[in-house]
Image (cartoon, rainbow, N blue to C red; front, side, top):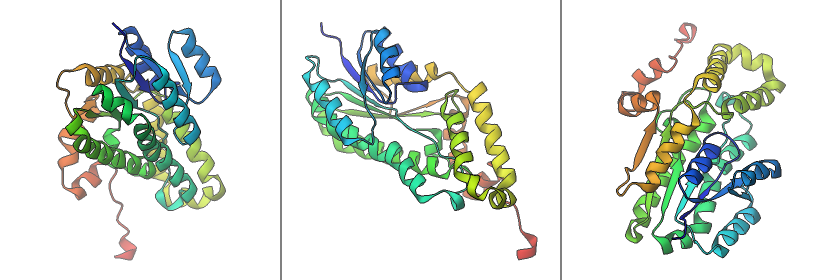
Length: 281
């Protein structure tokens, strides 16, 4: 019997790498999307087929879809995992940075999905979108990231409805804080974005930025292992009747069950509060 094929985007590190390795161990034929040849080599050495795939590059997407189509196994599953995180006060986020965040985390996911949908329709396959608890609950300093994940949640719901007639399941994986390089990369990106106006930004948002930096450092060191998310992805791909969403981690489960349902102002206070400017009142 031919192994079922799955495409995993953003497979160089973190959740994507853990998912590619786990699915390979479980007998799937894994196509792993990466942007660097060095990452491709390490995956190839592990018996996984890499594809050079930047989800913002139309040529990469077309080439990846053609490579999978040429494979005799077709395609059973798509795991849209590629993503970045921009962290800064929205007031100071360069508009080009916001566009790039949305291009990678939303537009790129839709572009890859469109390219391989004929293959998924033929196999009655599945789409698994790695969103975030940050796609249900927005927090200060993470506006661009939250906006992208809220949008990906919407995309997931729409695809589930539109593709249902063909038996294509579309599932959201909603991790909490995960120990992946995305947080340290996000912190470095924030430093670069804010450097030109650092004094002004610090005067206005110093406390919030410090709290966000601590959260990023804590997430990198003490977050849930990417393997736990990979296990949820495997379940979404293999369950006879998968759930429409899988929160991963205690913080995600609490967030989905409680925080997302609180009144807005109550949630604002719990997520960092709203400082009152008495002089302006």
